Length: 167
Image 1: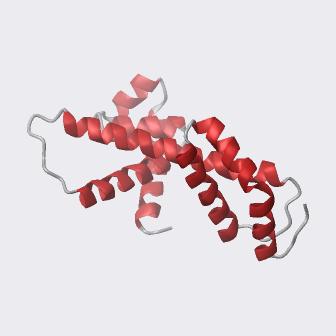
Image 2: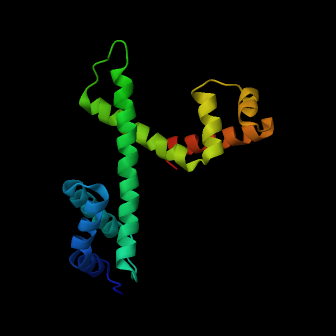
Image 3: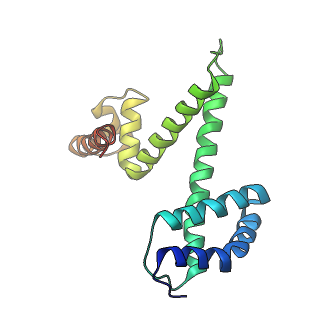
C-alpha cells in the first residue's frame, strides 16, 4: 500500500487492517478488550505521527502495537510494585486514587528515563540513589574505575535535569 495523504492513509489502514490487528493483539494478550483498546491506540498513534507512504502496513502497525504493549506491561509492573509496596507498609497511608494515579504516572516516567540510560548508567545511578553507596563503593561493587562511576553519574544526572527542564 502506498498512500501519501495522511487522512487517506489512516482511513485505509484502519479499514484494511484493523480486524487483523485486533485479532493479532487478542492472540498476544489473551484479552479481547485489551486488544481492542491497543488496536485503537495504535491507530491514534498512526494519526498523530507519520504522514508518508507505508509499504508494509501490517509490519508498521505491529511495530507500533508492540511498543504500546511494552508500555502497557511496564505500566502494569510499576503499578503492581507500587501497590505491593503500599500493602506491606506497617501503617498504610490513605492515598486518594487521583494521587495514586499521579504517583504511578511519575514512576512509569522515571522507569522510562532509567531504561533509556543504559544498564551500566542505570545501575550506577540506582546504587547511588537507592542504596546510598559512595562512588568508591559503586566502583568496587560493579568492578569499574572511579572515573567511570563519575561519568555514569554525570550522564544520569544530566538526563534527570533535562527531564525536569522539559527537554
